[in-house]
Image (cartoon, rainbow, N blue to C red; front, side, top):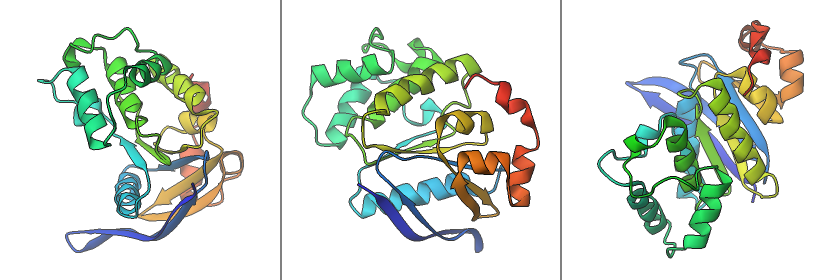
Length: 227
């Protein structure tokens, strides 16, 4: 299902931090949102998630840090059951194992607390929970910033494989051009609360038209990273 929102905006302390913005994302589309720190990327992501959920779209959000989604005092199995309850899904061991296997963490001990899992496994677990309800759109906000490049690449490879034959669209919010260069076909550039470019990833990375995009593309060493 195509998801769209019109006039997304946000203010903070009387200051506009996200100017009215329209967006449309097609089924299965892979979209990146990049911009300098403080440009409004995360604000845009939160506004989009809240608006689409209010309109009845299936939208899942993966935060930057798994700590935002995992209670250190609760078992991983508890978190999974809570995610099922939130989505009004009956427990399904086969579905659980399929998702965990798809993200490469089928061997994780669900009786353990988050701190007993590696950081990479925690983030993959959060992604698996986000995919539980087969959302129309998966919004990932700096999902690999706390991971080293090799673990980051492995996580994204597994996600790419899982989504390859599904209609779930992906919005990848990041400042990591190496990540979007390899993972998305469409790129949006945000600057001072506005989307100033929206085109194919190849076009923006090869011929950026705005100063914001040119500044992001100025350092080409991001091409050497494995993610």
